[in-house]
Length: 346
Image (tube, rainbow, N blue to C red):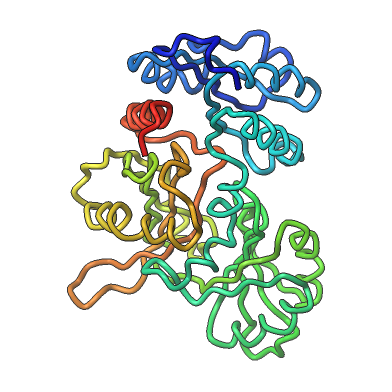
């Protein structure tokens, strides 16, 4: 990119999200759901503009992105039946031409898919995780794992609980029959293993299926740790009803409550994320610090209580593609990381 045509003292970025032609025509920083990010960037002297993306006018967006220093992307892996395939190809091309892209599609493939649960299973947040790359492997290996307790099956790429199932063997039943609970539904159903595998066939087009042990403390809630690069930007905590069988526990489910990175309940988790787990993640996945997403989060379920009485944490997923909403403090953290990146700081 020809950076000499721009003032060296002013950086420009585009904030990219999905929308139609009308949304693109009417988009302003003030009416954006990312208005706080626009304001935080402006406070640091970074000029930011909205970039509304749709495949029908992708070339216009490409030209817009080539005219800025960086792009912050908020687009789900699957939305309204459409994937990110075309967008990711465009972002790779734009990045190859010198525009900084966060999060780069190649980084998403490393840390933003469910496969990260398998690749980091040896870390302190890990569990007995399997990766099935074919339906045949899943048919062969899943029954033995179900013998030790319920499992959670997750498609490699998805959001909103799509392609996530709790699976368990039926009492007093041959392994040919199982009970499954779709994360997007409230009621479980009994079916044959082969029938369930048939439902999962399309998942293998996205890189396979991840299999984790079900965490019995799931009904106590999920802690979401928000990260801006390698620094904690806050927390979210909520009681969930997804994959929880108990009607009483499901009735306690509520909205996620956001807090700052100073929340005393989660300081051990913050230390683990900043000092241990994020550096280990970067090393295992070969992600340089400057390529970490400007905003990402890690969802943790509570694991067994440790000998000292502290909670252990089991990673459920990492969200990278479209992290929103987030704690009120996050936009300032995002802007700081963006400023440092555009200034060339490591």
